[in-house]
Image (cartoon, rainbow, N blue to C red; front, side, top):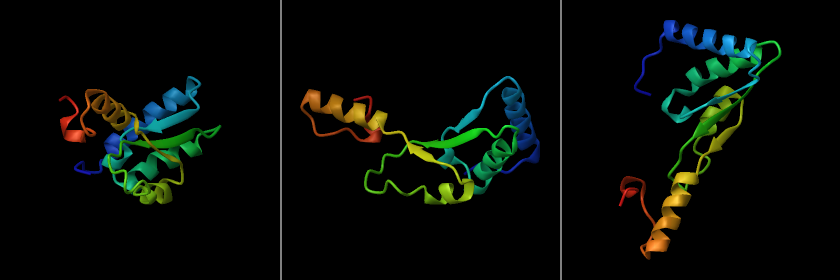
Length: 112
């Protein structure tokens, strides 16, 4: 992660989570979790689980490495919650390439 840890930012995030929870939200998805340090993600997950009633959480990642689907084990261990791998963009890109008669698209050339 390129971002520095900031207790001010974490406080603002957790206050927002609390307000959403008070409005009835009972689950949170942490988008693009792989761009945060696992221990930072765990802070938010632990906060969500400490709410009353506890909120459900999961982490969403976007992985283009089909050869290593389990590379987010460190997030699962740190946050103790499920991690989903969002394959739709690669799936759509490969099917569009097949329809054009080319071999599959790579992440860098998805607009071609």
